[in-house]
Amino acid sequence: MIGKILIANRGEIALRIIRACKELGIQTVAVYSEADVQSLHVQLADGAICIGPASSSESYLKANRILSAAEIADVDAIHPGYGFLAEDAAFAEQCERCGITFIGPPSRAIRDMGDKARARAIAEKAKMPIVPGTDGVIDDVNEALERAKEIGFPVIIKAVAGGGGRGMRLAHNPVSFTKEFGTARVEAEKAFGNAGVYVEKYIEEPRHIEFQILADTHGHVVHLGERDCSVQRRHQKLIEESPSPFLTPDLRKRMGESVIRVAKACDYVNAGTIECLVDKHGKYYFLEMNTRIQVEHPVTEEVTGIDLVKEQIRIAAGERLGFSQKDVKILRHAIECRICAEDPSRNFAPSPGEVTLYYSPGGHGVRVDSHVYGGYIIPPYYDSMIAKLITFARTRKLALERMDRALGEYLIRGISTNITFLQSIVRDPVFAENGATTRFVEDFLKRNPKDQPTVEKVEA
Figure (cartoon, rainbow, N blue to C red):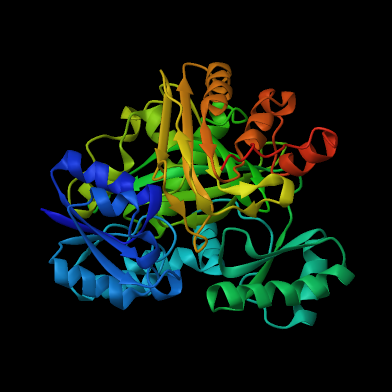
């Protein structure tokens, strides 16, 4: 049994884990940087330990400090949330060696699926379609260019250890390829400490569809349906929904069977997400696997009624899944908007500072996951996402109408946010009529040059 969990994260995901633990009767220990001393996760956990200065490189990314805190607090397990050390195979391995349960997949699975080239090979072996590309890392630009010509332009250059759009560059021809190849390697080295890149065919006008996986230690694997994450800016997701309005029942069935084969092929355990690209003809390709809980997990929870964080903890404790694939039902439609402290009028520049007024929307079919409150000071050291607004209803149309209403109710003063920008997308007829590909935001801004989203008025 797991009696006490250390949460190796911050912000809304730390709160999300604390709430799940409270309902399970499990004690929690928060860790925090000096910048997060007033954060809600510190206040609501049963205990809290400071692990260093504001910079994440000196606090939340310091595995030795996390493990020291775990030993001091005498915890049974560590939940990494998402980001930071969540997909760090070495950290998971250290937890295993220290006899601390890592609430996530085994270090081997993180290492295998975190390496993009190795993950592609596993997916291909599991008979899941993969995007045409190189078999592994390519360091020589001339060799890479020859392979790109064989694949056919446009191609995309990707960091082998990448994520979140970093170390990712698009090339439309041989001239741009040479420049972007070098840039991608530099970005990859800076972001991940690994300059390795590979080359893939760029799928034009794709949908970004991901399937949520749960796998226990007894060999049972299920998927909980898909999420459509096509609305992105610079490869960063802005809006996610489930189920995808694009998939047909037959395509959903085939993709679901494929992702389960991939999860079994890498001996996966716990929660994970297999991401895919689906072209306009309904042909799908394996993209990558995220070996952690996702930011957008609430939409899956709201359409299935399954608490993913509780399932993660139960699986880590050795329990069997309490349901099979046939028991998973999609009950309704859910949409999530990521609320960020950023200024759309200044190229989405981060907007840290004191929140002078905070009022979150409510009512039937509305969920808000956030760590922000009136008087809270948003630090400049971390990701700009400050909340997730989720709406759900019997139909997509009703969920969209509810999202429009909820965004209109959301009041955050003292800083700039992207709320107005998100509301303009939700109201856009192309989005409403299911026309969103991964180019949606770029095309939206071109279609609306005179109606650029404006930031909310800032009141001191």
